[in-house]
Image (cartoon, rainbow, N blue to C red; front, top):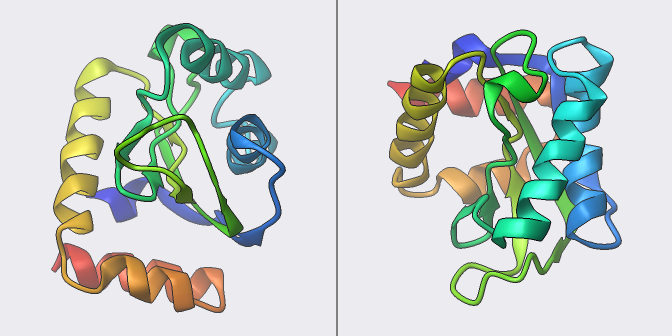
Length: 149
């Protein structure tokens, strides 16, 4: 379950970002601060987007910043970040991005399971609208727990 990966310390609301890289770095900073990932892990996310394109943009307005586990994932974790203003990531189909879910998976199975759970959550009617209106990290935790059923 996604709520098992989430911690209130990994949730940031109304983050100001100048561009996609700034958004990714700011979204992932709590994972660094709480020693869930290394700085090199975040650098690898940015490098991956620069090389492969915006593969982390997984749905309209939604990005899942992540890198390979061996890039510096220390503990399984998921963050939730809403941007004050959406930013383009270069995804013709899904830009601009408003919501980021930075993920640290210490193995490939964890990454796939978390991705599947997140996709299911994104399909829940009103889920993103509720996240957008959330006023606190505790409220975000409640929204996610309720969406999980």
